[in-house]
Amino acid sequence: MRDGYMARWQGREYEASPDGDQVRIYQPEPGAGFTEVRPGRFVRLVPATEVDDLAYVRTTCSWQGQPFIVLAAHESWLRVEYTGGRWPIAQSIGLEEFDFGVYQGWAPVHEVTEVREQRV
Image (cartoon, rainbow, N blue to C red; front, side):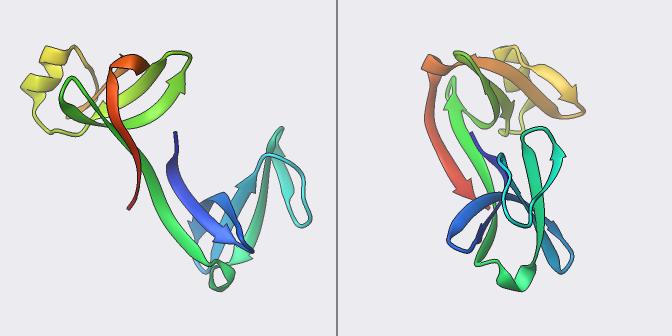
């Protein structure tokens, strides 16, 4: 489940983070020009002009007939955030109020439908 910036650089797609005129690209293994920022996480700064594509990718789904963003996966569960904007529905589903107006919960994978990636 992807939720974040993705950049295509030199024919390969990377997790990314825009940084002014540059883009930080990340990969899980060492590579030429990449610096380890923590175990299993390597970063490289590249000029934004060299990046072929930069987009925000978000995974969406439907659960109990309502729209959600998929934030994470763990075993047979998905961490989801309600995007319908109607707090009575969020409460009736049993979601937790994560922040003011932000409702999240754990949904069984087998109950989730219409999972798809969207480039925003």
